[in-house]
Structure formats: C-alpha cells, structure tokens
Image: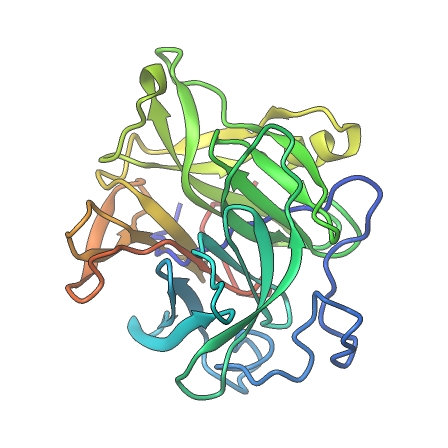
Length: 320
C-alpha cells in the first residue's frame, strides 16, 4: 500500500426509492435544491483535476470553512458559515463531482455557497434528516455513481457508529456498522469516510475507534477499508450489515480524526484534539500510523470535518 495523506470525504447514500443527489447540471434551477448552479467556487468545478483550477480539499471547524492545497499543504481560511441568526453547528462536509459543497449539522443537510474570495459561506437548507431512533449525524460524503444508486448518493455516519444512506427528501436507510474488535468491543466511526473510484472499482476508507463498554478511545483511531460491496448489498436489501473489510495497521496513534480525505496516494486526517489544544493535520502512512504535519494554534476548538470532490484522483489502497 502506498503512503497516504488525508483529506476528508464522508459519503451518504440515498434511501428508499428516492433518486440520488443532483449532480449540479441543472443550470442553477432554484427548484433543484442539490445544485450550487452558478455559485462561484474556490478552484475549478471539477476539483482541479482538469488543470483549470487548483486541487483543493475542504476542511472546517464547527463554524468556519477552510481549504487545503494537497500539493503545497497550504491551509486557507475561506470564512464563517452563515444562515442568518440560526446558523447551525456544522459537523461534516461532502463535495460532489462538480465541486459543489454540501454540509450537515446533527440533524440536517445544507448547500454551501462557497464565495470566489474570502467571506461568509452562505448555507441553504436542503432537507432535515429523518431520524429513526434519535440518531445524530457527524459524518458526510458522496458515494460515486452506481454504488448505491445510478447517481452520486450521500452517506452519513451517526452517533452510534452506523452509516446511513440519505435521500433527497432527508429519508434514511441504514447500511450497517463496523463490527467488533478481537475483544468483542464495538468499532465505531470516529470521524469520517472517503469514497472514491480506483481502476473503475469503488473503494472507501474511514477512521474508526474501539469503544470498550461504551467508552470510546480518543487517542488511537484506526484507518479502515470500507466493504463497499457489503454496503451496496445492504442498501439494495434494506438489511444493515458489517462494513469493515480490513484494518490498515494497528492504529494511527492519534485520536479524534474527525475529518479525513485523500488525493493521489496521500491520506490526510484533521484532528480535533482535546479542548484548548491546537488542531492538527495528520498524515496517515501506508502502515496506518499517523505523523503530524501541521499544528494550528489559532484553531483551539478543533477540526470538525473535511471533504474532497468525488472526481479526485485517489490511489490510497492497493488494487483488489
């Protein structure tokens, strides 16, 4: 496996018989809530892969949006999320194939209008997420087309470590969990997931953690490969399954990796760290061990999530 650096992408799939999230090709029609239309973006509409703009990974705190240039590792502050007087706490972020940015709170999905220069990031409510057992959602990302549906579909992770498909109206379909460790303790999603296509095969990675007796580790998240085939089967059968395909190493030695992403053979994780401690950017190597690349003394509230376009060139895992 090649060395990986981390840029966060969390995928959420559409549930029931509803269609997937719009790919942004509606020309900005106000009746199509899942498209940014003509909103100006940092970088190109295809994540920089066609050479007409910089390659970008998005990351955020509870209240502020940033970009990471994966070629220079430069982090740029874009601006605060804004929804008038009722701006929610943002828990994660996803980017579609056209470079449109979506974010979520614990209970809702929003469209984010990223400005062409630094300034407020205006949010528009897309849908409230239907909760079946009072789940709260902390991870978000797009699965590539033809994984859960014919179009890109949004996948989210909840407070109990399960992944859910989210339809355009906010309805949900449970996909499964990450099972248990050798001691029988539950693995739960600690931060994020990334889905991508490598050699025409859909792949996925996530940061997970062991939760003995309900008390989760906060110092040693693990990098895991998601079983995309099992996820697809669970979506089609509407029967949740085990989504852990394999662990990459025995631990990163870093916890609270709430944002995860990738570009080429690099994986980057954005660590929240303990309250009052500087947020960190962690590179996860091919052995699954993390190395701190940067600390951000001004971000003491910590990173909350990250995301990268589903068209990003990613080759983190060895071929199947």
